[in-house]
Image 1 (cartoon, one colour):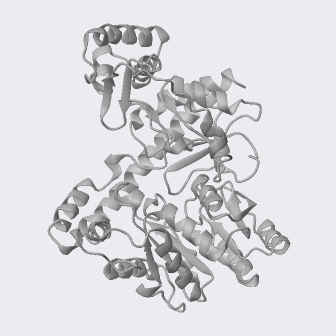
Image 2 (image 1 turned 90 degrees about the vertical axis):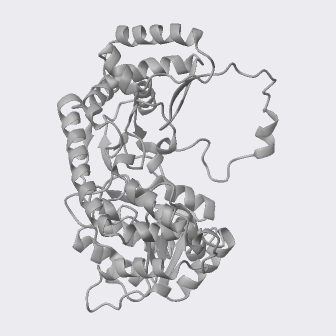
Image 3 (image 1 turned 120 degrees about the vertical axis):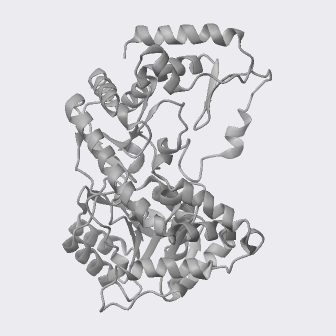
Length: 469
């Protein structure tokens, strides 16, 4: 991946762009790799150079196009600074995991799987069938389509021991994706100004949802094995909190899978303090060498409120999730969803139910598990062989991401920028801490596109780390 090769490709494309009409599509990254006998990272660096010059624009999943001449105008939006004030959610830009990237980048930053790992055929067929039913114009019950409620309840019952009272379909409230479910859970069960315990690090979306709900975040130290149970107990005692948000199965970003002993201690602590455990099981369908073990399956007295989403495993276009709760907590959750979204599209619920009840769904999940293992191991091997300065905190047994530590002296922001300039997009670990970061970390998604470029990406990351240590 030499700078000369990248410059040569950019120069050749620049000559073509000079005579091409606005909107003309450039050859795909794959075609450019073959044409110039270059690596994907080198091609991406050339495309990024053209993009930075304003010559092209890339649409993820569509292609790269000749950019039209910019419109003229004052573009003076300075007045908005005073009008908007401080952002209530605490963010000034999109989290890195949601940033769009140029076609051909080695995208290690996203929280979503590559489309190749999604059941596209099942989804297309399900939409076709749904279009011929009353779902196209029907309004579902506020808590969700009964058959989908029953499916979520049955899935959790499969992880429930015989001596625990199983959940019922009525305990299930369908929400428009897990992010909406988090805001609802925090708002309905905690409330503005009240303390909510969060693992640190934890899912950035939970941090954003907590800000949206107006709760007071209290961090609890956590890592590749889960939270510190003693610290959790002390924090409950000190704060009087009545809720703890956690991801016991394949946590993002750490990949942690709680062992039974830890799970038992956490449940005991939650019960002792008359509190809720808000369990996020969004990675349920992405086990690799282990199965998720929902703590909600070990609770029949309403302490665990369980969240499971189908958005990542079925399709990003199908934002369907479920909050499962018992007692008055379920009723409060339902009322909050009415205020937020009224109900979830009947079409999306029908399609989701269709996909997950097809016999081919289980076959698909087995294939995904196999592919995730291959991709995870490719990334781990690439880091071990080409990026010794990057240390994986653990080998995740499931999920989509690898949590890795960089040397403590490194300038993380510059590492991220240098990698992006070289066509490798990574997730800065700072975004995953609800308080001050405890080190320099990055989160790498091994489920994304172009796994054959993981070794090249590791070389880029190593070079950026050494240059900014």
